[in-house]
Image 1 (cartoon, rainbow over the protein chains, first blue to last red):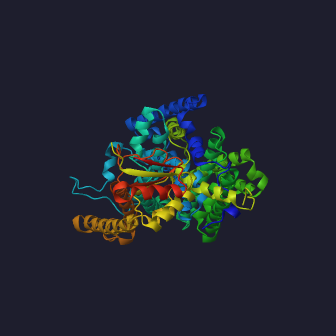
Image 2: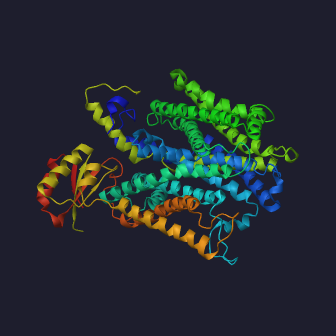
Length: 462
Length: 167
């Protein structure tokens, strides 16, 4: 199917199967480290701040935010789209690469999926709050109610959004959990602690690795993988239609759905890069997440960055080519120059230009630089959403309705709160769940064992 | 308690496969095989093919029909609301919801099917024959009552088992 002679081993260090188990599960048995407890503390404080801000928003109303009649969507929608984008990493990694039979995914997919689940959870907070009267949020469900029954508007992208995100959260969580069942069984059978045996045994649900179990496991993972691939594309396309059905200048280009999907995968992969560089360093997993793995992610980032650059230029070109004065105003006098120049150029430089540095092997090989680039991409992607939301809304057709926008402390606190939830979730993941899919790594490890007996020496890079 | 099963334990995928092939050849019935990761030759040649994907297709087919019927009933028959003069049966925009809810239904239904068919649920107490089978050992399980125990033991050993135990 694929040739390891060409690609090089996926796992370094000639590990035996028992060693793989021991290496990956050792953080679960070790006592929590000092930095881990500090991290948990800081993220808890951020979460508390976020919960306070959510409380203020719900008890007082959306008026505590900086949004106004003109700019009705502020940080809430920016952050919603940003988090959903980051949440695309897990699915892009595990599912696209599963369907494409890219075996190198197996060292990274677990962490990427963990990110997805937490990030989508963070994202869901924002539209729920933005609805205003959150206690009436269930009105969005089409259920036989006493108001008619009056059903919901199926033509509204906001309703599509609701079901798409619920489905996405469910599928990514179940795909993640499914992959963990064999690993939980491994921990159950290896641990000496009675508490761990009971806890992981509960979640392993009696997994033994029998033929019947593996058969259905593979069947189910292909079903979930296949349909989730469709979902990844549709979720962010639906998010883009939230914008594209509006009449605002700057939201009209037909490239919106693919532009959003690609942007989501871009920020997701950047976040995976950030997380994997940290994870392999602190847990000494360099032999599982090898330099070759990160090199591959970097190459994907370069390619996706080119698509992003093309999309930005296409938008600008179409605005000019259309001759529509409102489009021209938005792009040329409100983004490239004008009130939001800084944000526009931050987006353009961080997303379309800086990642191009990774064409150079030296830069790609220097993980400090790659780490900084991956953070810059996520900052850039945040500014992209800022550009789309705020620049278009603040100055549209009627100059008398123009308004500016800046977030309030409460709004910023909600965002910090979701960052806290994300860090908290990722830290718990580090401690309680095997960070790398043990059974999948074992399956790809055999290629290395085979080639060890072969004649040709293996090179590490492709 | 009298032992009911014979377990052949192997260190490597290759030796397990040798034993597996040999036993299939000689017609010695294998009860089950436990491995730390899926081995496709074993999955293909032992027992029936899993019909998970076929079942999943039917779930999707009926879910899609069901969702479309629901949308049509609520938006066209039960309470046709006028949204800016657009037709009540806005079929193209119903498709978005149909696709997403179909995916949603397939996920939930196949998860339940998986749980039932693979016999997996929380606090399940299935017998664990060898607790290294999820770590680094490959185990072939033979039911004593279905085969000649002596012959099975010799076969398992000759194929390179590190250990043959009765349980």
